[in-house]
Each structure stands twice: as C-alpha cells, then as structure tokens.
Image (cartoon, rainbow, N blue to C red; front, top):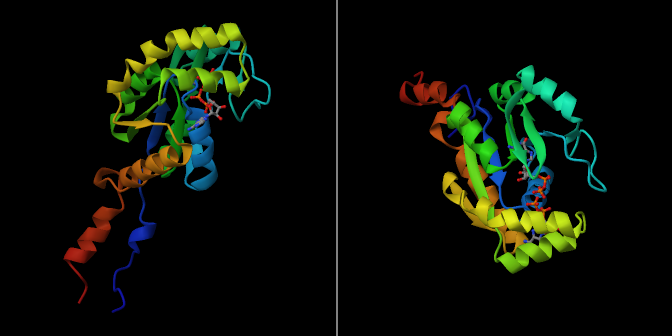
Length: 219
Ligand SMILES: Nc1nc2c(ncn2[C@@H]2O[C@H](COP(=O)(O)OP(=O)(O)O)[C@@H](O)[C@H]2O)c(=O)[nH]1
Ligand SMILES: Nc1ncnc2c1ncn2[C@@H]1O[C@H](COP(=O)(O)OP(=O)(O)O)[C@@H](O)[C@H]1O
C-alpha cells in the first residue's frame, strides 16, 4: 500500500554526531579513519591544528593544519579551539567553527584526538559525542606497526611506546572499545557503531513530525 505520509523516514533531518577515535599511537586510528572517509559519504574529518612538524607524505590542510607555536597560542587566546592539548611534546587542537556549524546542518564529524581532547569534548558536547577506543592486539604488534609505518625515528618510536600503557589506561573513558587485530574486522565494527549511533532517537530530530503523522494520519 502506498504511504500517505508527507515525509520519507530515510530523508528526515538529523543532528550530526562527533565520532571520536583514540588509541595508543600506532594502533590504527589514521588507517581506520581513512577507510571511513573513503566508504562513508556522510562523515567528514575534523582536521586538527598542530605544532608538530609534518611527516613525509602529510598534506597541510588535509592531515593537519601545521602552524608555529606563536600562531597556535594566538588561536588559543582567540578561543578558536573546541579543545586543545599537549601531546608528545607538541600542541594539538580542534578548530571550532566548522564543526559547530556542520553539526547543526546534520553533518557527522570524525575526530582523531587523544583522551584529554575526548574528555574536553565530552564535557562540552556530551550528547553529540560517540567515543571509540582502539586497542592493539598486543604490545609487540604495536611496536611492529610503529616501526613498519616508517615515519618516525627510533627515538620518537621509543617515546610513543613508553606512553602506550599510560594511554591505554584511559580506555574506560570511552563508550566503545575495539581491538584492531584484523583491519577489515575492526573497520566493520566501527561502521556498525556509527550506523547504530545515527539511529539514536535523540539525534533523529526530524522524527517528531514523522511520528506525529503516523499517530494522527490524515484520513
Ligand atoms: N587533544 C587532541 N589530540 C589530538 C588532536 N589531533 C591529534 N591528536 C592526538 O595527538 C596524538 C599524536 O598524533 P600524531 O602526531 O598524528 O601521531 P599518531 O599517534 O601516530 O596519530 C594522537 O593521540 C592524536 O589522536 C587534537 O586536535 N586534539
Ligand atoms: N589491523 C592492522 N593490521 C596490520 N597493520 C595495521 C593495522 N592497522 C593499522 N596498521 C598499520 O600500522 C601502522 C600504524 O597505523 P596508523 O593508522 O598510522 O596508527 P595511529 O594513527 O593510531 O598512530 C600503519 O603502518 C598501518 O598501515
């Protein structure tokens, strides 16, 4: 039977969500983020600002906005960040403007940020935030991944390994925890989390009118 409703459920207005992915360095956040951006047409990356120098192959404006310390400090003073933190000796921050406007328009955003940034975003925008923590299958595999990525010196890798346990200790500040053993399985799980979170009643702002029409159909 043809529907008499004025709106199709699939096209209803929805508030955007903030999918945060954190992990110890090398567990696979960047890899899973790239897969999500490639396969999901509705999520955008929140590109952070950092004082860390670019790695080979990283593109300014795509991977990060690379800035000097003075410019970063000015942005902090101007209130340009939703959150910012000091990680591995460098400053990292999430620019505010694009995300706030995008959420209202129903866009979803993906954040590759650490536990400090996650706490700050959760305190500010709790209902919009979905927190996912990726774990490596083992500490040995984490070291192998950091080494095989080939982007950091032995000294930097040693620093990241030394921080791994401290970062893992924040796993209980997240809504979901996924072990990134096989990459395709891990990606499938993150995709399932995103799909379910998009269906949360509180996010489906357009449902109110739709449900009203279902309950009071025009004869
Ligand atoms: N709080 C916060 N953390 C960030 C931000 N951008 C990146 N990070 C985190 O900073 C850490 C270092 O990032 P990066 O230097 O790219 O190395 P990675 O750990 O190999 O991804 C990671 O834990 C990122 O999640 C940000 O805007 N805010
Ligand atoms: N499930 C996986 N199995 C094997 N290698 C992986 C897996 N996930 C990521 N990697 C590799 O491990 C390295 C670190 O991954 P990356 O996504 O850069 O981690 P992070 O962003 O968390 O620091 C990269 O070389 C990546 O290709």
